[in-house]
Length: 204
Image 1 (cartoon, one colour):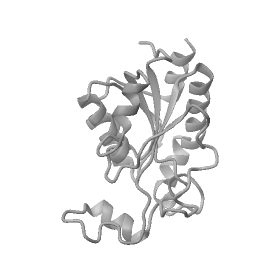
Image 2: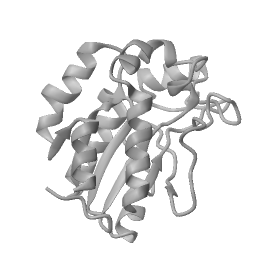
Image 3: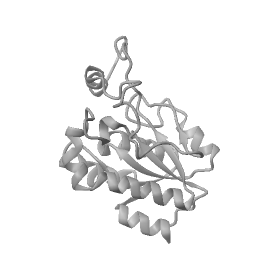
Image 4: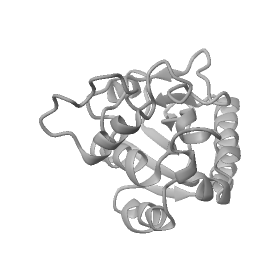
């Protein structure tokens, strides 16, 4: 299996300080698993290798909370209500800013913010990928069993080749990681790899 740079993109999902940095609102919930899988190192390695090879980097950000969000929604999800209560990814806050190691560079694409879990739903992600000739997507970022899974599954439904990198993501529990990669992932992903395996394929 090859990853042609002209038709492959890295989807970097939700690389916010609230998820990835000490002091982030959600970091305490993901820290044990993130450190166990060496999440930050692997994210850096994948992004660096992709840039070196000329793959498109696409930032897939979650909606940044602003006052009044979800208050008048007919059917806000429990996760939406919880994130609003905690003001996760608050707009114009440090927590709602991309981690220093994952800042958009010239040529990168930053798509519209997703309100739920899927980076495709109600955003321009599909349009941007198609306009850049992308047919294969490699998902990294946060978190494995929600936004990564929902984005990957939606991408499969739209006809994209989907790769999950199981140690370039994290979750709130080992059970969630297991479900994401051993139970649910195989129902939609075309490849489930480690960072080491992916880097070997990118350098081949």
